[in-house]
Each structure stands twice: as structure tokens, then as C-alpha cells.
Length: 289
Image (tube, rainbow, N blue to C red):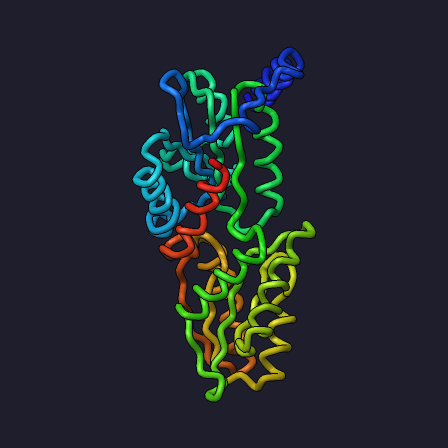
């Protein structure tokens, strides 16, 4: 089925080559004409955990619907594994390319695609490719930026998280934000956040990743050098799903406790924090302009 969809996309792309509309450079998406249909597609990595999905993905989808009343809001998941596991439970989620093709068939002419990915990593890169595949189908299709797109985003994240999760440095209390990480160069953003935290005086705050850099050992070395007594582990992920439940709450926690460090957990996804939801909302507005 996937191969058939891609073949159709490629054939139509060849036919339509050179016919992409200039609307993306000449119009304001916030002004929708009467004969145009505007869709706002929210794209998430996805999760099989119902509780965190309700607090994060469903919450941001609902907020978007309330704010952008001139658009019809849809959602898609990028994780094929999550989609498959949910389907086995009778919960149907579609990939971005499937939803975009459906929007075309339903007569939508303009589309805003906004992901809730933390960085411009592999998932966001794949989303960019899918948007480009269907570009000839629409008069105007635009892709918004991930959560951490520039220094302003990073500074805001630091302000939000340090106010939300406090630690007394004199008592040797530390906070560790644990991200997913990636093998692409964009994993450097995690190091940037860690550096910015310390540059702003938050020397007892650290950032680590499960599948990228900084690693667990990077963080552990910093904690040992600071003679940390207690550590609060916090997911640096949009949803608090499988990685938060297993890697953070079990693997990282147990490993730190073996180092005689007292461990506390604050298992919540970034997506359930209203101020972080607002950053994504602002990215949508920026894309519409």
C-alpha cells in the first residue's frame, strides 16, 4: 500500500512539475478566501500510552482547534511502530503522507503542517520530505518549525523548566533533563541547552540523552564532580511514554542509585506544560505569516 501511494505521488509530481503555486510567497495564510479550504495538520511522533497522550497530544490538538478557528485541524503520527501497536488495539492513526493525500481528495487547497518534534532530527526530516512530495497537490503548503528552532526557543525552554523544577545547589540537589537524542547533527542542540543552563548560573542542571549526546556517562561524570546527593530526573520529551517509563524511570534511576545518589522522578511530557504548548502555537502563527 505504501509503495502504491509513493508511486502515485511520484507520477503526479512529474506531471505537475513546475506548476507549484506562488501563493506561498505572496499571500497571508491567516486570510482565507471563501472558495479555499484551509487545513492545519498537527504531526506527532505518537505514543501508545493513553494517559500521556491525553495530557500532551490531545491537549495541544484541542488548544489549536480553539485558537485557529478558520482552519480544520487534523493529526498524524510519524512513528510507524506506534501506529501499528495502536492499530492492534483498535486505535487508528495515520501517517502524514496518508492524511495529506486525504486532504487533497477532500478539496483542501492550503495546508499548514506543524510538528511537535523537539528538534529538527530524523523524524522532522522525514516529515519535510513528505511535505515536498505532495507540494504540487496544493496551492499552498507550509511546514512549521520544531519546538527548538532558534536561540529564542532555547532561552524560553530554559526559563520555563528551571522555574518549574527547582533544586538547591547548596544542598547538592541536581536536576537532569533526559531527551531522546538522535544520530543526526541536530543532537548538538541538547549540548547547547546544557551549556546555556550552566552559562546562566544553573550549574546543578544537566541535559542527557538516551540515544544521542550528552550520554548517561557524560551526565554521571558531572554529577560525581559536583558530589551530587540527590537528582531529579525529568523527561525532555514531548510525551512521557515508553522512554520515560522504562529508560528514565528504571535504567537511569537504578544506575544512579547504584552510585549512591538519591533519585526523584518527575515524569511528565513537555507537551503537557501550557507555556511550551504556547511556543508551538507561536510557531504556527509564524508559519501562517
